[in-house]
Image (cartoon, rainbow, N blue to C red; front, top):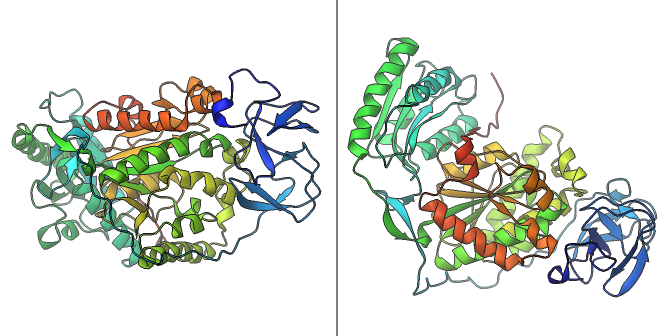
Amino acid sequence: MSLLEIQKLPTAENSAIHLHPSDNVAIARVPLNAGQTLRVEGHELQTTTPVPAGHKLALSAISTGEFIYRYGQRIGRASKPIAKGEHIHVHNVSFEELSFDYEYPVEEVPFPAPPANMPTFMGFQREDGRVGTRNFVAVVAASNCASFAAQLIEQSFKGEALPGNVDGVVAFPHGEGCGMTSGDDATQLRRTLSGVLSHPNVAAAIILGLGCEVNQIDHYLGKNAPRTSRLVGMTLQGSGGTRGAVEAARREIKAMLEQIAGETRTEVPASKLVLGLNCGGSDSFSGITANPALGITSEMLAALGGSPVLAETTEIFGAEHLLVRRARNRQVADDLLGWIAAYKKYLRQFGGSFDDNPSPGNKEGGLTNIVEKSLGAVAKAGNSTLTAAIGYAERITTPGFNFMNTPGYDPPSLAGLAAGGCNLIVFTTGRGSAIGFPTVPVIKVASNTPMFRRMPDNMDINAGTIADGDRTVQQVGKEIFDLMLRVASGERTKAEVLGHHEFVPWRIGPVL
């Protein structure tokens, strides 16, 4: 049956979801008992085993070695004979890396012309042409050695009256910056911290070091400065220690607050939105409800000339052929495949595989392997043309649907998206996630109603209503889009209200 026909109360007709005509599996909408009768696409069958909600069951007998299809795509092979109506999961599915005959773009796809009636939001115009959705003062630690002092600086402003247009003074503590190589690892950290310092949601910033670490603050000052105004560098060793650095930083920040007190939000086009797309704690419903709904939002934004940015390289593996055929030109397609090849090389250093990605929670939620997870994850980007594929924490400059090379691990993925300039992030989740970011609002979209009800303080939107039969994918996508504009104009997300501001840069090198 189609999602539009699903009713709330489980019946033989609506207890399983068939996603694509060629699929030989259906997804249990509700927990199914052994011997339960189902009618799927006019065919009657009985479950032979219990099937948890979100998990797969066979619509026909599947022989050992035969492919299993979901979303009209291969997700693995049967590792043993599977009976009609049997539960399908890790116990009877084998994983294999698939090879694809990529459909490369033949001609370059032009960028879409922006519409005459452009939606708007109220944002902070920046000198480099970008627009902020928030107005923070950031205190960024150059290394772990300065992280405690950065946190003390943030804490010292708690309870103090700030100008009404300032969202707060926030610290960026982390565990990197020293005991690391001076090559690619340090370069990536500096690119990440530079992106944080120059972010459009940051009105002014301090880069704070100990003084003797590998990641010297000089990399962020002078000709290397990531921003042209309101950036101050200082070290604990040069400021009299921890207390001296806190006092010096407070003086600098108070002067900054006086400078930015007069800044106000102005009406700006929605094309100025750079929207990070991330998922975490995914379940089988993520690829049915929350991710496709966010895909509608992404398509709407890309059509306006905004930039939705898909991330998590580990979670496009097995679905990359779908993105290659949508690339703007051959170079973009090659860039995307280049990031996947580089990630494979990175994993081989540690004896890892892309299929190590699905977590125990992902599997409990019905996702059998990384291919199945990826096919649902890429739905966050909708069906827009892929206009660019860039490296971790690189500046996002291309309108339309972008891809950024990040890990699937949520904290460093969000850090890369934010450092690249995302001024808003939408995060879909099936198992439940509580992550946020210091200076970028994060909207949480629940894939299923039970989890939304269990975690009401963390979830902003319930996409589970799609599986419940209450709303369509298009309706929830429009709801996300409308909330996105309101949040961009200042409405606070659940993560902001709770005070979540996790920050974890992606470390790729050895510890020395």
